[in-house]
Length: 270
Image 1 (cartoon, helix red, strand yellow):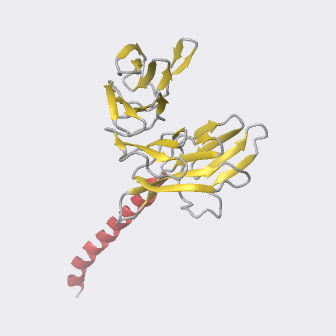
Image 2 (cartoon, rainbow, N blue to C red):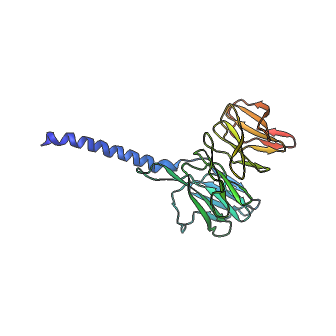
């Protein structure tokens, strides 16, 4: 009987090991770390770092509120790293997603809008299942619309008052969107790891033009009058015509340029 059982136990044992590895992979999918996201409204500092988003009083350094709180009915194992977007009494950010488990391999990602009040910041709305990969890019609020880029290549436009989609469908780039979008004159400018800068109609999400570069773009585009400044992994920084996407000039770097350029008084820093 021993000779009969051993061949049966071996595949069962291997199956259990395989299942354990799958469960471990699914369980650790959303625990990846990233750089903390930091923003300010001039009075408070808003820090997204790992399991929480925390608002601090800039003068006293005391905590104004922390999300999620112990009574918030959300997954307490979620991770947050994108810099919160603050407009008036509204704070919006996304999470790194919650794994669905072995039978549902996708990650469900949510966007949250909080009321910026102390000592508790109640949830105004939550947009669930809007993406299936983490949100790295800081959201951008323009009036009552919030634009959110995701790591599964999407640019979302949501009603900032209730979280409902504004565009007929999300814009899909060729790769992840890690940098905050920029807005000017009814157009939304979106940089992507697909090595491109996309100009979209802000009301419809329809692409107006696209400019391709040598390297991926991990940061936000910076606007000034009629130019857009873009840094990329092709070791260059570019000035692009805001109306048509034509490259006006390019400046070299010695290596990849991760951060967004900065503009001040006629000078671009990178």
